[in-house]
Length: 258
Image (cartoon, rainbow, N blue to C red):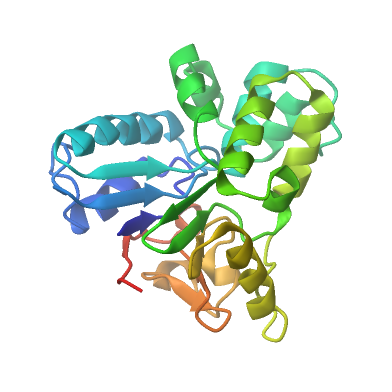
């Protein structure tokens, strides 16, 4: 199984990493055959080409399926932010900007992405799962425990968050964005393994793979030195956020069988 962390509009680095992993060819077509590839969310903000990133993922999904492979893509908090900016705009928000649009802009929103966020692209984003189970691994964008607020099964979480993204309930959107600001739930050397263990017991899987928190914020590394996942919490958690928007080169992780 292959996994790629937060893209944040870094389309060129995204493509370079996929080329290095031999999952696409120089024309950006799928060459991974029957491989499984997951993107971990946060396609937008802090970089110029979020739309190009999701358009490539959407294209690869169809090509991979035709070849017997599969490409999945999770929902990240910055994806919720841009959806909120488009759908709720200047409506009041408890976020740092005072409105949903201002909060998105304050978090690195790119106006060109918002301008190109068509109904078709919105529908695709709204249908992204928040959680997935693949090869005995639980996949989640955030290293946080809030998902249980939205359901006690993967299916329930994805269903409830999907419904929220269709609604105009500003309080529900604010609450989700507030929850999504949580991170580092499993970093504590003493408490972290037990916390991630409880998440795995609830949703399944033997290991949690996440993005959301750039690896340099968990490990003693400079962004440019991040070239592989960070495994921690007694091996129960894996961070794949390559810190590309911070200057990291980016990578696609090939995770071994458990």
